[in-house]
Amino acid sequence: MESYDSLHNQLLIAMPGMLDPNFSTTVTLICEHSPEGALGIIINRPTEMSLGGLFEQLDLRNVNAAVATLPVMNGGPVAPERGFVLHDASSEFESTVAVSPDIQLTMSRDILDSLAEGAGPDQSLIALGYAGWQAGQLEDEILQNTWLHVPASKEILFEVPFENRWEYAASSLGIDISRLSPHAGHA
Image (tube, rainbow, N blue to C red; front, top):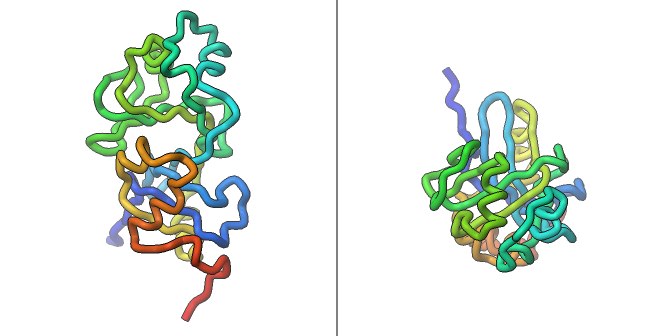
């Protein structure tokens, strides 16, 4: 029986030669990965929308001003109308999946209600849409030198500024990604 190497709880770092504009210079947290495919959330692409704007669309009132200014991320090109919240493990919600012992993914409305009230998790990232791969697709892309990957960390996910996450994640491998050639080669 062949072993399966899951990329669950890894950060995918787009290589400089990434041609797909949906993923150029992105960092994506892989939340689920199995032989059937993978699901990830891009963590470094803020949209023009703030969390306050999202709350307004959802008709949430009495929104906590401290969270209203937080950006909503473009989580990926699939289902951009669906919301996803990556957060620390400080709170429990209806539809929560553990990505790791300290990073969780919630897709239920109750977390947005909690965030609006200022009672949500201590650390969170809100995204619309996700990145998805069919069976074998992500593995093929990695073999084609499209992605680097590193273990996920709360620091990169919640503390490093969005605009620095691509370089910072690559530097955790000892790589200055800005110096890599956009043309992959094989020896």
